[in-house]
Length: 143
Image (cartoon, rainbow, N blue to C red):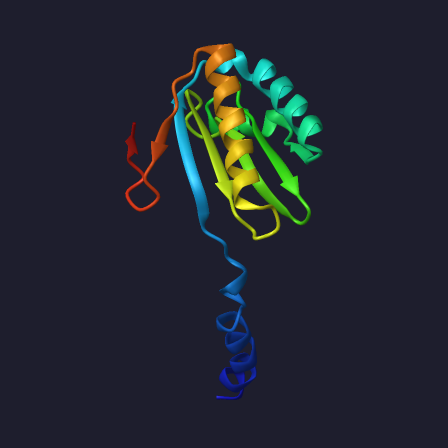
């Protein structure tokens, strides 16, 4: 009985975590992707981050090759102030490129939308990718 009473504060602490910091995705996109383009896409994202004065975090790509059974993979985060506003990568499936935008309330929405549109436009123009908009509730793509 004493053990249960001692574990009660721990359990209450676990269930009282502040989930109010969760922010859902603002928008999501997918495109068929050739993993050989990984370095070129990463270079483009570094250029865009510099142009928009965003911080960039480019994960160690060797970590992601494990997830994609040896296929070249990556995940790049573009951050504005304290939040990752764009995440792009092919980790997991390898042949699908995902782009997720999150509104943390710090960057004006019109700027976030313009940034997202620029990334998509450049990826489609330079690499011939065709993005679809992913429905956030069903995860299905539609054009």
